Amino acid sequence: MSYLLPHLRTGWAVDQAILNEEDRVVVIRFGHDYDPVCMQMDEALSKIVEKVKNFAVIYLVDITEVPDFNTMRARAARRPCARRRRREAPPQAGTSSTTRARS
Image (cartoon, rainbow, N blue to C red; front, side):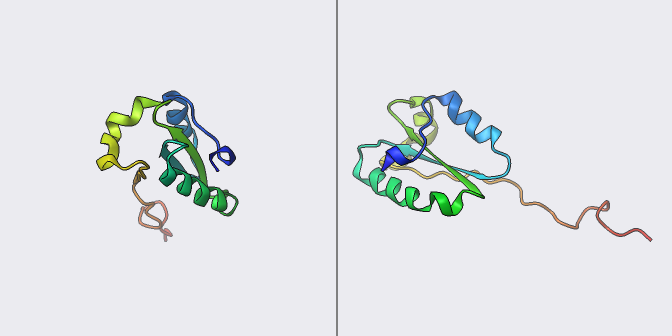
């Protein structure tokens, strides 16, 4: 099912996908298209891509083709497919003095 999802073919493309997406969550599956575990994940991701398209974008990265991130991931305890979470500070709605009503 990996043919249904867009692939990022270079480290630069991965960086740009993350940096240029301001409104949606970037989901990246690092792994191999031929690995059975990744194939299952690709199938699951391809089933939800339409449902999440307004708030998430999904990409695939072959770690043989794009080895740039292998050392960063430290091979995630040798799992064939890895999931990563990039956390950002949550918005602080209504806590700033500029958002309070002034009398």
